Length: 266
Image 1 (tube, rainbow, N blue to C red):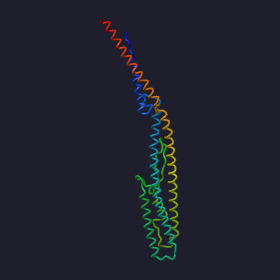
Image 2: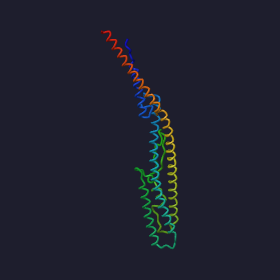
Image 3: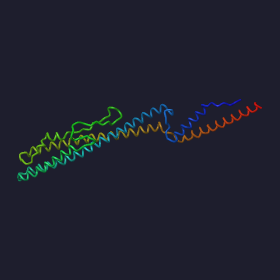
Image 4: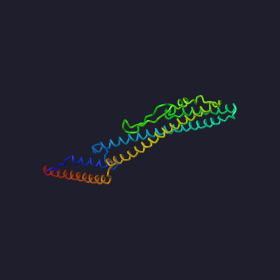
């Protein structure tokens, strides 16, 4: 009687060998949906979330770079306005003659040009946070509503409103109005710096929270995906032995079948 072997058994063992080899080489228990349908679906969702949050971290870092650029521009403005205030205090000295006042005005005009240049040249990727009123929205999460707005200001207009475009140190009667314009301008700079600082703190917090979340989700994904390499090696050896045993049995069965046929034909 011929011994028959079910081909599906050999195929099952062969599939197990392939799976064990993949787990050992990749370090992953799940390398395709066929390895674990439910686990594969959960893993895809977790990894999608991680990648989305990594992108959100990149967006937040870009926002911080924008704010750093704005802060540097504000620092230049503040320095210029403080220097103008010093010149204004000097102009309050009644001992000065017209030539002295004209010299102060020339210095002030130069500083005003530098202030205007600082406002207009402070730019990050085409955005001018000191020369345009409004805000820039940053996507800082994986959902549609996860965003934060970074403010921007039209400081040219604000400083003009305070009268810096007609700043005059040549006339002693303008002393008080000039000093008031500078104090109001410095107050606006301080307010803008405070808003930029609050936005920076929020983005720092967002980045920290996203990184913590990603670490936790990466651990969850690892628990689902990662292979027990020692177990995979053990299963590989076991299935190789099974495969070798089946091959030997098949060879033995075929040999016996040949002997029977030879007797019958003789």
